Length: 433
Image (cartoon, rainbow, N blue to C red):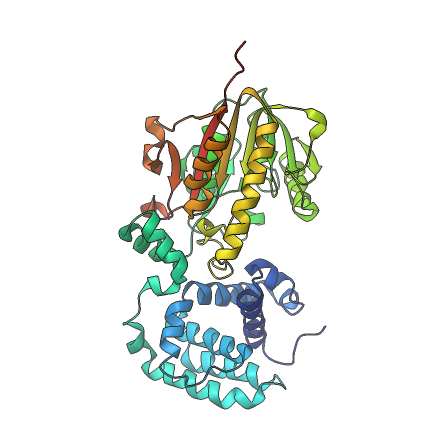
């Protein structure tokens, strides 16, 4: 499919509009909604970055953008037109795009769409009103408007109002890049112009193209948020231990375990994501047994492990800094379904753990149903498990919740924040003789 006969910037805007449609109407992920668009892959790298910026910023500011547009749109137009106007308004209100470019290029996209050309006048009128009056309306909005109400209320209830407000502030920020290095984090921080934030995590405020950074081709590091690196760090010395990494792909924790000398079996049911894991193992020169299978039913020929790490499928609401789509494609029904799946996986993990072994359960979720409440349920069901509490001084900065770790995105905000995460370390009691 050839690109439409418009400017590259107009094509970037068209791609952004189509991606926003896919995310909001069909629950598709941001990256896949872009990469699956044939026009996106024909753009220059600069224009691809612009399309991604348009979508991600619109998602981060969606509540505020809609609050402004409410003042100027009497009747909701078709979704393509509505999302085109949202993309245009985002440029005017938040990205500092020249007024004429934001308005004219957005209107041109609608004019060039045979089905919606009749709405080009509406889009032009609305965006020109945003240009003149939108910023005055914007001051009456707040970042909390960008968080779906059911999610924001759950955060207020689970944590407190101040924490919910702080998380809403983090949502509108573009996060730094975290990488996990195999060794010498201080040396790598100096080499890459970053800083060591914890353990082997080096944080870069400006990264550019990741693949072009020193050490990438040599496999000296991999991209991984600080929060996601903590479950393996919390396991302590894993050298020589048999570890099952359930739901392992795309493999950051598998790489950590392998780099620490563990005998790792990495399990996942997604062949595509396991392909990424294998590529990362090859690039870093690390090794693990990789198996494509459903973790809830995989028997492993009766094999048991010293450690089972279950980074369970979840709502991923804690990753909103890097994936602003996650808050807009989740609902109550999905959450209930995920909780059920997590319980199946926890039972499966328990079966694969030898007596005396350790189970690390974690989710990149800010919903207590997938964290603290899940552990309460599991410990009622499995009396042979006990909690190993995170009581050491080194964990205090991350926040303690009944002996678990509950990480909130505004922690370490002076250094750029972190992903929301929940960690629970359990031990299976040895059998009495």
